[in-house]
Length: 183
Image 1 (spheres, rainbow, N blue to C red):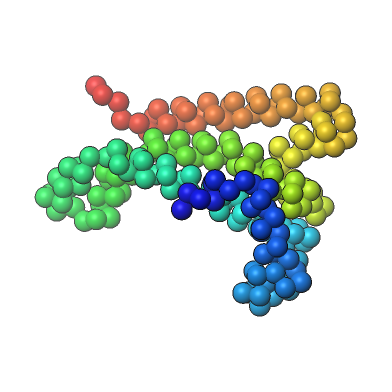
Image 2 (image 1 turned 30 degrees about the horizontal axis):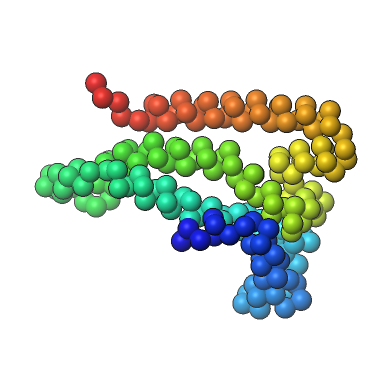
């Protein structure tokens, strides 16, 4: 389950490029279509999202599994003694106790998803078609190294840093509100 996270993004992108080839790639053969997954805006966005999700799925599973192991099973046992159903136990006990872990996962996903997808975008689509798969990291890279405009790249990087700082701060505060604190 965690193996996709260990695969080098460029190596994974090369395999996905072969699988998404419009002239007989594995995905088109399985689906029975002739979609050009990396050269049409809609399918290209979907492909980048699916491949990034495939890479991140193992990380998310590992984080949630670690969060679940930190929840004492006696809570569920006590709820069962009180007549709670499995859904009620999940809704009222497990999810609230897991909420700090889930907010950490949300924070990491929001802050790192664009970074995780950068090598895929750079390798598979180069931000195209028509800028459909361009993300913040690719845009910063393009400003600084594609068009050699270091000033614009630095300014965009600072705005990006400040924006993500605000998002991180909001998510950390949300995590504090969701967390149970000892009284």
